Length: 185
Image 1: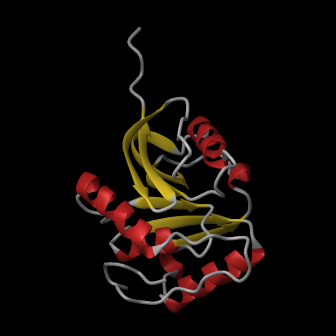
Image 2 (image 1 turned 90 degrees about the horizontal axis):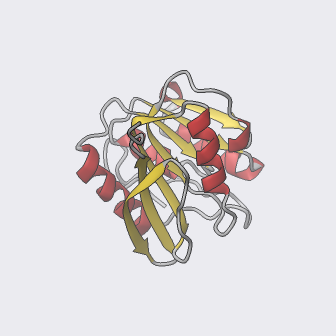
């Protein structure tokens, strides 16, 4: 597993020990970041969250491409060890905020984020539950882009969010979501 592009291009990442975490494949990450690049234009200065972070590959890829900061949320101890090691190896501590907890324990946001990356366990519905809560807590604004990785057979339906794009990559499906426009009164 390696960083695909940006300042850390080609740098190796540690994967968590054990079977609990399923790292996003390089091919899936490459597809995701190509989809995001075409919509965002640049990652420069973005505030990002990598939820169900595992090794942190998604958030670290965003930082490598110029994002200003990333909040990493992970609760599995071996994954947290790998995540912290990856951040240290890349000297990314200043732009990284690691939260060793469940995504569902996050409190209200100080401000909406620019990009939220979620790679929850497949087949659990955890991504939809987390996004519903994050909307209510102010993490998602009108300009926020959201990437949700699911099994290729799952649908990403979240009240208040619209599907902007979907791509199947092997056993994974990447869904880009945006806040739905408010209904006219």
